Length: 111
Image (cartoon, rainbow, N blue to C red; front, side, top):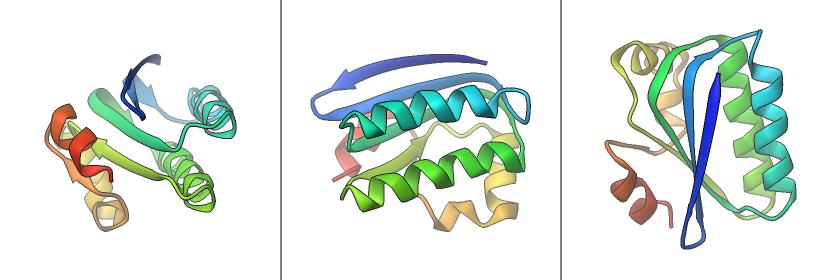
């Protein structure tokens, strides 16, 4: 799993590449929660290069969303690949998070 990040105004965009599963979710969770606890409030996750996500990976997103909600922030996702979109749909996550096609729409729609 590779993680990239970029700040666009007050929106923190994070790109996940590879697989988000039992082997990689712990490090991804620590990375994201550390930044959220450090003051990031608006998180846009770029999933366009995410090949696979397991239920453990979905849990990471739930943890981040809950932490952001307490801090009056928000989490959105964008760039879902067909396999990742299918997992989101089956798990009911398409209704839990705002989903956008691209980065510009996600950044504009986060507030």
